[in-house]
Amino acid sequence: MADPSPHILIVDDHRDIRESLARYLTKNGFRTTVAESASQARQVLKAASINLVVLDIMMPGEDGLSLCRHLVETNQAPVILLTAMAEDTDRVVGLEIGADDYVTKPFNPRELLARIRAVLRRVSNVPKSRDPIDTEQLAFEGWVLDVNRRELTAPDGVMVPLSTGEYQLLVAFLKRPKMVLSRDQLLDLTSGRTPAIFDRSIDNQVSRLRRKIETDAKNPTLIKTVWGGGYTFTAEVTEPDG
Amino acid sequence: MADPSPHILIVDDHRDIRESLARYLTKNGFRTTVAESASQARQVLKAASINLVVLDIMMPGEDGLSLCRHLVETNQAPVILLTAMAEDTDRVVGLEIGADDYVTKPFNPRELLARIRAVLRRVSNVPKSRDPIDTEQLAFEGWVLDVNRRELTAPDGVMVPLSTGEYQLLVAFLKRPKMVLSRDQLLDLTSGRTPAIFDRSIDNQVSRLRRKIETDAKNPTLIKTVWGGGYTFTAEVTEPDG
DNA sequence: AAAACCTGTAACAGAGTGTATCAGCGCACC
DNA sequence: GGTGCGCTGATACACTCTGTTACAGGTTTT
Image 1: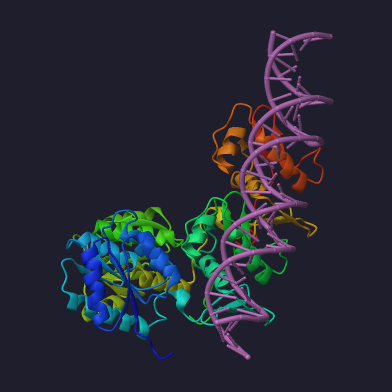
Image 2: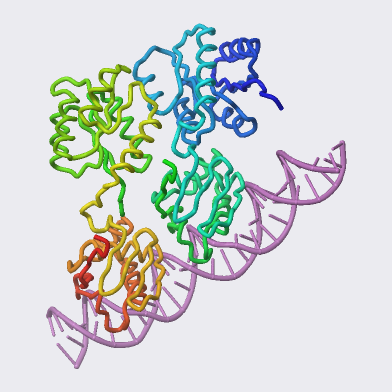
C-alpha cells in the first residue's frame, strides 16, 4: 500500500461549511470524513485512521476545545482549529492546549489548504519530536519500553510484546507516574470511550498488563490499586536515550 | 497525600498564558505557582522552594532577562525563557546569560513540557521537599515504609502490604509523630469524610493497623491510645535516604 | 458501688476489586 | 471469501476492604 492520500476529519456543526470544505479538500486530493458534533467525531476517530482533524471551536454539545485537548493528550492526530472570531484568547488557549494551527472564520479555503499541508509536512517530517512519549524509549525499574515496536524488554532481557490496549494503558500510566488515575480517566486516555456504568474493561486491561509486567501478580509493585480511587503507576520513569 | 513532583514557577504578564500553562503543567504532574511580574516572582522564590522557572522575557517593570541573570548568578533555579519572537538576539543573549533553555511564542505546550523535563533531568538536583512524607521512604523503630509502593518492611525483613486505608492512616500518624490526634482529625486526614456521630471507623482502622505493625496488639507500643482524646504515634520517624 | 462513658474488636454487610471464562470482532492468511 | 487466531469487552464469582453494629470489657464520674 503506497502512501494513500491523507485522511482529514472535518468537525463543524454548520452543514454548509462541512460539506463545501469536504468537497474542496476532496478535489485537492484528500480523503475526507465529516462530523457534525464532537461525539460524532469521536465515533469516527475510533473507526477510521485519521491523519488530521479540522475542528470548529464553537459547537453545541461538547466543546471543540475539549475534543482538541483529548486528541492532543491521546496523541491521536494533529488538529487545526477553526475559530469564529479573531480572538486572541481562543488562539492562545488553542495553541496552549496543543492544537497545531488555527484559522479564523471566515477563512480562505486556499489558506486552510496550505496550513493543512504545512501541518502534515511538519508532523511527517518530525513525527518523533512531539512528545517525550513519542521518542525512542522509556524505562522504569530496569524495563525498557520500545515505543515504536510496542514491546517491552524485562530486566532479565526477555521481550514482552504488548497488545494495543495494553500499550495504551501503559503509556497512560507512564505519562502520569505516581498520580492516581480513576477508571474513567484511564478509559478516556486509552480509548476515548464514554464510561458505562458497569464498565470493568479497565480492570481487565490492568489485570492483563499486570500479568505481563509484574513479577508477582498477587502483590503488584508497579501498578498499585487505590481502593475506591483507581490505579497508580509507582515506578520512576526515565528516558535512557534522552 | 504524597506529592514529590517538581515545583514550577511561571512568570508572565499575560493572564491567559500564565493560567492555561499552569493548568497544563499541573495536569502533567507538576506543582505550579504563577507570578505576573519579576518582583512578584522574587517574592515567591523567597517563600517557596522552586525547582524551575518558566520566564517571559518581555514584561513591564523589571525585565525577564534581568531576573534570569539574578537567578543564574545566585544559583537558585534553572530557567526556561519565553521569547515573544523568534529573535536570534534574544536567544543568544538569554543563553549567554545562563538560561537553561528557551522557547519561542507561540509555543506548543508539549514542547515546553518536554524541555522542562529535559532541564530537570539535566540538573537532576530536584531536591526532595522538606515535608518528610514527600521522600521515598520513612523509617521508625526498624520499620521501613516505602511510600511509593505503599508497603512496610518489618525489622525482621518481613514485608507487610497495607490497604489504602491503613496506608493513609499510617501516613497521617507519621506526618505528626508524638501528637495526639482526635478521631475527627484522623478521619479528615485519611478520607476527608465528615465525622458521623457514632463513627467508629477510625477505631477499626487503628485496630487493623495495630494488628499489622504491633508485635503485641494487646500492649501497643507504636500507636498509643489517649483516653478521651484520640491516638498518638510514639516512635521517632526518620528518613533513611536523606 | 452504680451509672455513664470510652475503647477494642469480632461479626457482618455492602461495595469494590481480581480474574477466569466466553463471545464477538477484526485481521491476517490462505 | 472463508478460516483461524488474537484481542477486547461483558459477565460471573470469589475475595478484599471498610464502615456499622454489638458487646465485652475498662475507666471515670457521681
